[in-house]
Length: 409
Image 1 (cartoon, rainbow, N blue to C red):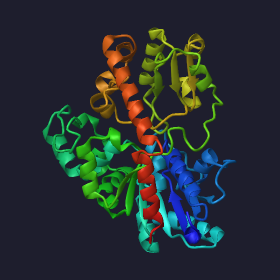
Image 2: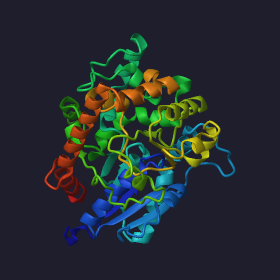
Image 3: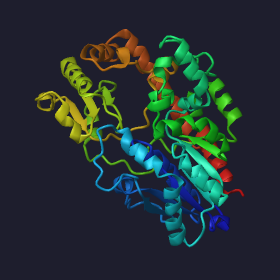
Image 4: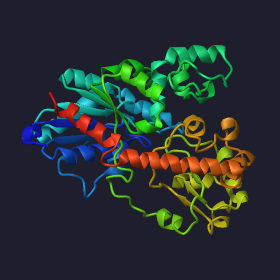
């Protein structure tokens, strides 16, 4: 990238919860290396910064700045995981503008572009105030993007149909069912939260972005879905940083070396995310199923949740199971897409973790003949991803096009 980028200053706003931050940080690192004369300001909460920074190998043209998380001083957070999300979102554009001022003061140049997690919708208002381009980043599974353009139809369908009714009106996603819909999308009236209102607004907000970047591979998405999204957005780019993140993978927990000692395709991996966790009875059922299965397993579970597991579970399964707080991994995807589009997994029976339901799923995937087909399909998906991610693949081309969009006035 030429010196024409030396006056460019890009402000980056992540959604500082769950697994949203790392994919955006990886993208920013890749952009920073492609444009070493450009300044990048990564603006996030103090807790987010503590988790992801400092990084000894962070490009020198990326600086970090902290803004408020919105939680009132001394306020005891409830057990409900969305409360802290609502507090952050309520701070709105004023909070983000404070981050902009910090960034401009240190960089000694004004912000010329904003890249933000799509969930931080108030960043669009900031971009409009500054009269700069707004690039939206979409970390969740790409197919979920479609839902926010059909909110009214989905709600009407839910009101008139059975929970297992398919949604034939979603282009390329006819296999989706009412039961697959995120609850936040369906909240109305008093049920609504700040977070749910932000999500529902995405169908109106995202078409205003100069570009929307999804953290996924186009080759794995239904063509009709891709066509529909391209018709609704100014530009849509599929840009996934290399399969192995730019940020070096550390294995402080030893899970990767532990996996190397196990036979190929023999270890089920269990993860429920970091923002919302299953209720205690489901955690107990999962533990009982894993113990009774006799299979080796890798379970990603925050340390403070271990007390909810059955007494003695960790000690009894220590020789064949491993529980860690984080596992180097790619982003999780929607259950329906995994089961019905790629056919590389199954949805838990009744969508509630029970001992018998999880045992049934483990047996199907790792023991029964149907599981062989699922594992073979997983290898095909892996090959598709590897081809897409090579230097001549679509991901590289979309990244180059994104660079042009960002740095072309």
